[in-house]
Length: 102
Image (cartoon, rainbow, N blue to C red; front, side, top):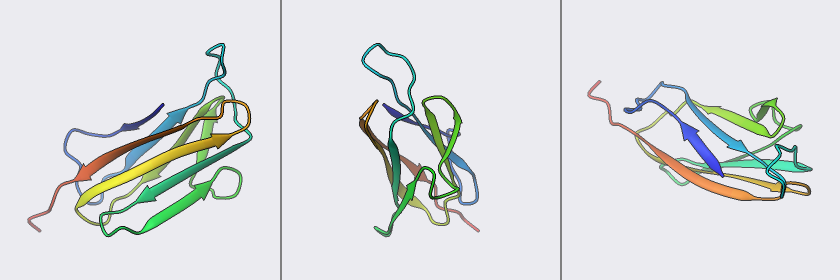
């Protein structure tokens, strides 16, 4: 359900677009009642965004929700999109940021 779009090699300072689409039982794109995004960084700190409350969680079109993440440290980042109401669903993914020699 959720997918992360990024380059093959992610570096500190890159922008990683995390995205998710929500569909109803007929596979039509829908806007759920509530959409929440959670990001856990390599240190274990979790940041939460809610659509309509936090500007970081955007809806570019019906059923599509995105967050652009700028990693500040090397390691694995885990993220989760979840929703309530019509199109209720959840999905998780991750991406890894390479260590820098500089």
